[in-house]
Amino acid sequence: MIFLSYLKKAADKMSDRLNAAYLVIFFMLAFSFLSPAMALAQEDSAQLQAQGRQAAQAFASALKAELMAGLQAGGPAEAIKVCQQKAPRIAESVSAETGWKIGRTSQRWRNPANAPDAWESKALARFAAQAAGGVKPGQLIFGETVQKNGRRIYRLMIGIQTGGLCLKCHGASLSQPVKARLAELYPQDQATGFTAGQLRGAFTLRKPLP
Ligand code: HEC
Image (cartoon, rainbow, N blue to C red; front, side, top):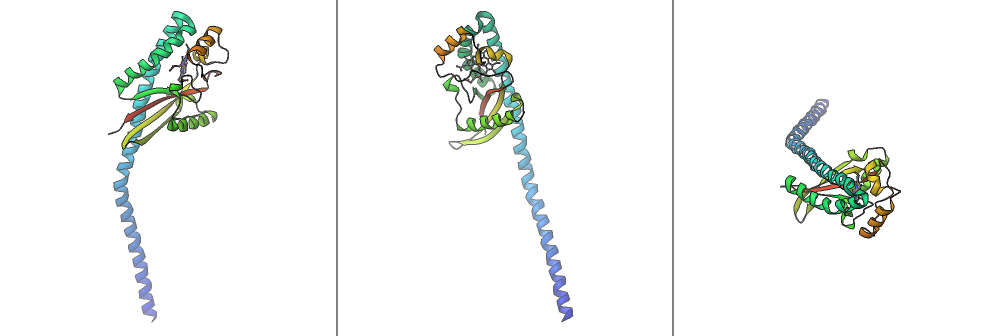
């Protein structure tokens, strides 16, 4: 009897060991399949974010150049028109060059056409919380693959910081001609009262995935 129970114990131990061995093999196999897929997903996302950042930078610097030229030529009240007319055109040419559809959005928008959709609102709320926690607006980035009409699209947002130059048209104290021009062109304007360093909004980009 004692011998039998010893045998049974030994067999149990053995089957425990076997189970453990099977488990190890199972996990090794699972990871050998999963880890390349996971690495790929992460790599893709990092690569897409780097690409998107470049497209946003191209857009930002072209826009800034137009803005500066407009300010020099006619002052802020005139530059408002430049901004209004040039921003969409620059966005289109950056799209054509890079394959990223690009725009700007904000929780406090000036042009209602720039108002955020549901996905953008979520990202902007996240940015606002991160900025309140001390992250610099220009460092904020959020990307995600979303499904739309059965197609995969990569959506990306990059934070925009309010600089000193921006205050002429987005600050707390605007000149009379700027106020008048804004009231005429953007009766629903919410994009004033900002201070330098604050989160102004975000570049919003999307690209269809294969
Ligand atoms: C000469 C005035 C002027 C200056 C200076 C200016 N902006 Fe604007 N900004 C505008 C106008 C006008 C619009 C609306 C453009 C449109 O109709 O799409 C706008 C729109 C925006 C938007 C898009 C969201 C929205 O509110 O509609 C962002 C983001 C923005 N500006 C950021 C900035 C930043 C950052 C700076 C400084 C680097 C800056 N702006 C400087 C006039 C200005």
